[in-house]
Image 1 (cartoon, rainbow, N blue to C red):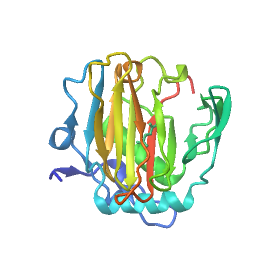
Image 2: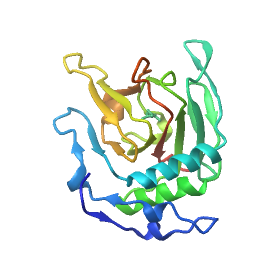
Image 3: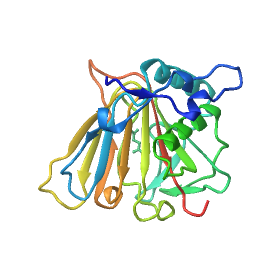
Image 4: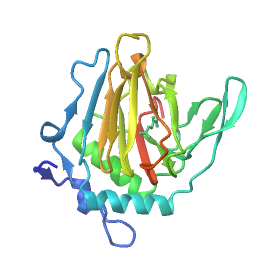
Length: 232
Ligand SMILES: O=C(O)CCC(=O)C(=O)O
């Protein structure tokens, strides 16, 4: 973990019970901690472990696990309806409707801890405005996310996506969509980490979160991907 945390305006935000999670959080300065996947062709991907301090990450995880109305959705894939292998929630500004694999998601209003995380992101990247977030709950190593790109038209041609991980560490895998000469890239996403995917990443790369079983099977993990729906 690198030194050099900084407090932000949102770190003083109070939650309903007078307690703050973000007060314990530290948005860390990218140059100290970032793993810039430099040299990855056609992509802008940056990984920041320790974006949130350990204790803040633990408290966000517990709060979200308890408070979010997690849903078991079904999607249409290759003409068949199948259960999504994880629980989900879609939150955002009122007009931020998101559609993928035949599923139309109307947003829930921002829950307080998700709004706190959004504000931390805005403080660290003031040029970006996130109006929505997809929340995924992987109950254990049997829950997963298949290969895909976040390239729906409503995200625009070069979406900036900020992905925050809480709870168990899970492996995240990237592969180029057309260049089979390039090896897949594996990243172990730790609790409290932040992954940025920007530029041509969604156009040229796919990503997934494979199942994981056996002796090192992970416990529960929550991931939040903050997005901007155009025109919402
Ligand atoms: O859980 C993760 O880290 C991946 C989430 C993801 O790929 C997505 O929300 O599109």
